[in-house]
Length: 68
Image (cartoon, rainbow, N blue to C red; front, side, top):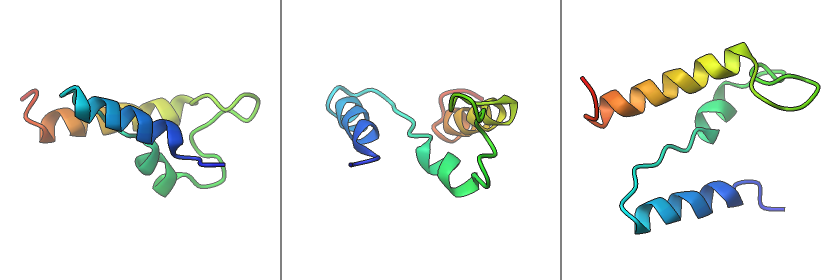
């Protein structure tokens, strides 16, 4: 089982089609402790997960010069 297969496919697609992509899996993986960012019943992001996602997106937009 290749856990990062979907990310790899999407990132390759973005690169080939000149689409800016953001892989949030590394950001979640390095900060996740004891299922910090997910509901236990279905694996969707909880409030903390949405907060982390928004912070990762914000940093990508700022660091990429897409917004000021």
